[in-house]
Amino acid sequence: MQQLERPLVVIANRLPVSRGPEGWHASSGGLVTAMRPVIEQVGGAWVGWDDDPEGVPRRVDDFSCDLFPVSLSQAEVQGYYHGFANRTIWPLFHDLVVEPVIDRGWWRTYAEVNNRFADAAAQVIEELDTPPMLWIQDYHLMLLPELLRRRFPASPIGFFLHIPFPPPELVARLPWRDQLLHGLLAADSLGFHTPRYRDNFASSVQQLVSGVTVMGDTLVMADGHQIRTGAHPISIDADEFATLATSEATEHELDELKEQFSGRKVFLGVDRLDYTKGIRHRLQSIELLLERRPELRGEVAFVQIAVPSRDDVKEYRELRQQVEREVGRINGRFTEPGHDVPVHYFYRSVPREALAAYYRLADVMCVTPLKDGMNLVAKEFVTVQAAAGEAGVLMLSEFCGTAIEFGDDAVRCNPFDVEGQSYLMETALQIDDDDRRGRIARMADAVHERDVYRWVDDELADIRRGSEGP
Ligand code: GDG
Image (cartoon, rainbow, N blue to C red; front, side, top):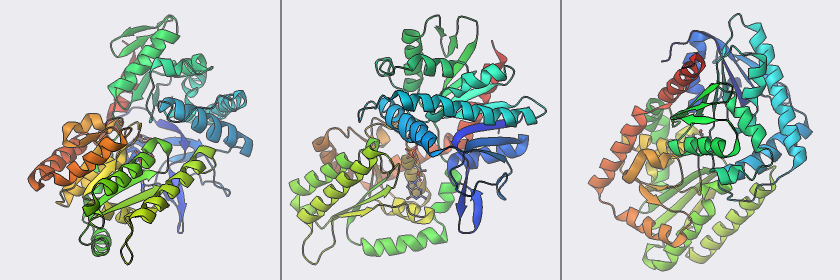
């Protein structure tokens, strides 16, 4: 674990806590799990949007980190979050899977809300005896490095982008590209999931900002300020998932699922219901598969867990309708009287043990996004499968960050090619047992080697090195 000399202040859209039936607790998820030991060692705070009507407490029992909520009005949430973050930046940075909306009002609100976050962070920083290390997360807060640099020149500032960084010709479409790029360039270190995203950032800066020199992984501004850029693939707490794989609760869930799907090969999809995840293309490939190979009807089942997401946004409500129409059409076409439906669709999230049981059950896990910064579901699947001695196959889109780490051990697909994808689904079913086991083991080893603790270490080391200068 990285030894830090300073407290750490994380600034992210969300706070790392959730309210359950028994009160507040740290949210599940790799980022929070991996940050916990670091923050507990050096002390620090987390600044984030508080959307709880009764307010988030300053501390929760199982996470010793001070929480500093930023409250936003409905109009601010509308412009900053649903608007600029999710309808402008999200589609633009995911290669225009849908058309980004350019709205000046949303942009103004985004800038104002970034200022609100800077004010909240400033309050926290001023309470500390030592200038802390500042670590800003994601596309909601791209103006923050510059806003904080002006106020705290001595604090090391890092920023990590959890989504892809697009090529310069897409960045150029944004009327406020200068402000966003300058916002980021005030950091000491900028982290991306892959070398490609990092290179896209460097090329965008070279083409769109004057006076910046690129020297390997370092960008040098005209005034001498240097920024380290790193490719640090985010990951999961692999040991935790390996333990979950064979827990009593997971085994229990699995027994029930095996009974329900007995005698059938199971294809699985687990995604937020987001248009970047390729769910519609995947359903169309399934439909083609069942159309082309009638003998498979009744032999295969397709399970799609679609976690509700951003349902305040028009494009997401439309996507839900489209997906549900497609599921209905496929089940209407291929269900035989007295038999189970081919597509099992759940519009909800399931508990972690059930998720692990589905990962174990799956003969073919379909991770087929049209574009995805990384994709943790793929890493969770191979980790759970290997820990439990299963031998499933991972079908993986070539357009997600994870594809770089898994190479040919996954069945790589192009989700835009619906027909090709349906052929690959057949291929996946034909891979022999030994080969499948070897592939799962190698991919799981890769995840264990680069788990989320490594990601935190790499990020923090870069922020420290970046702030120390040449
Ligand atoms: C963004 C980027 C990048 C899903 N269904 C259930 C459930 N999940 C959990 C999974 C996984 C997480 O949600 C999804 O993470 P992803 O990485 O797949 O996708 P995004 O939400 O789009 O995340 C992405 C990530 O940020 C990190 O930088 O990898 O590219 O888009 O952990 O397990 N969890 C439970 N029940 C479910 O039904 N409990």
